[in-house]
Image (cartoon, rainbow, N blue to C red; front, side, top):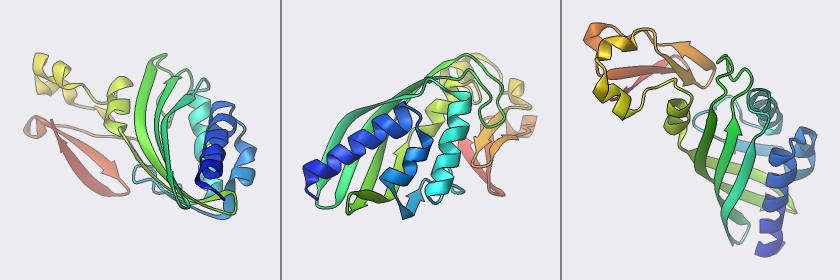
Length: 187
């Protein structure tokens, strides 16, 4: 396939699979052997995991719309720079509806073979998403309030929402639990 044909496949996949929410079209766009590389969602490793992940996201944000800001292609690889917009009007990974409008940007690198996507690597601004949903305070909110208000703050991990109990001695740090490993993010 030419680079232009590969870009067209990625463009159609974005529109039909994500924007129109046709989850079953994953079988058309993604190979049986598809491998998904997303550090924020390590449980989502294959085509079935991708379908399950999109269903869960659409349950919380049914108006998801992804804009392909730029597509670059070379050989069997296509890079997409994207922005998505959605409103969190349903349950999202255990977070009750907030009604908040969210915008997030990121990059995807796709590898295609024979007209299907066989592998994808993602990088996106998950911190911004958590801040927009009110899960993690923005730096401006932290500067205006004492850290003691953070007790009981929740953070999103790969398995959904987990409680992060922050004591006075933890002031100035968030603890995000991912797959059993604590990772701190300085504030």
